[in-house]
Length: 381
Image 1 (cartoon, rainbow, N blue to C red):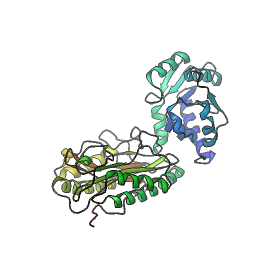
Image 2 (cartoon, one colour):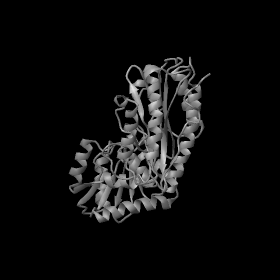
Image 3 (tube, rainbow, N blue to C red):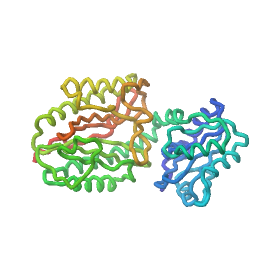
Image 4 (cartoon, rainbow, N blue to C red):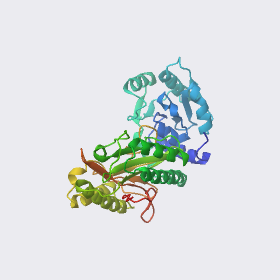
């Protein structure tokens, strides 16, 4: 592994967080979510399933605490001067509390994430008991820091997008009648990895025929027939930055509901992408998507948000939907530097599903489409 960005990029991110801590009268922040650790320091390891945290004093250098065997990853991926490791025989929560007392003696106001999967209730309760300090939520400030991407971050997303686009063309081209979903999955994985992707936040989704009508279905040994949809979705990763793309292909002609859903979904994607621009809100873009689908009489096939922010991700997800989603309640306006995955998908259980998407960068004057499939939906061979 190598460091993703120059030290100044992380120095700026940490300084912005410490400014928030100072303004809120917080003595120290403890960060547990892998994406937030990665954002603030560059730390990246598949071993995030074990306890790790970043301690950020309001007025001092941060310290990374990881399992002892993971400290090597920390040294390779960050510029931190201090990385502490705990042995497998040590309680990491107790080690965290001790480190807080060392870094900020008498700390009485500590910032913690309240929605992190990586500080479960029992550990959270123990940490509060051992800290004996008041706590304030850290989730919103961290999300706000990550929402607008820097030029260097956008560069990583562009790399991921080029990889995703190439892999989608390869997978779509392999989706011929008679091929199995497993065959297509093998092509997708090979193309993603050979074009430069590291391990992804989620595996590719490949579903054909009636199976495409069930959300998050992935490959089986089912063989593809002519005239039925093959729904594909994938996201390459570079330095943990992802760029997703969904595309649907078929051989021959679609018919009935599948044909109607394909027409509506393409129109909805294009209309929603056009609405992703400075000054508009995600709620407006979502309304545009739903209105377009409704104009085809198919709103009953659409039961979800219309997109979400993307950037840093670790499994089990490739998105940043907790930071921003295209849904009715999101009224913050789009701003240049935001990156979102616009992803309308229409589904009828037992019949089929159609999805067309684009990862979109908001620019000063509108937007730029980063992910797309150069291979059209109809594979008439």
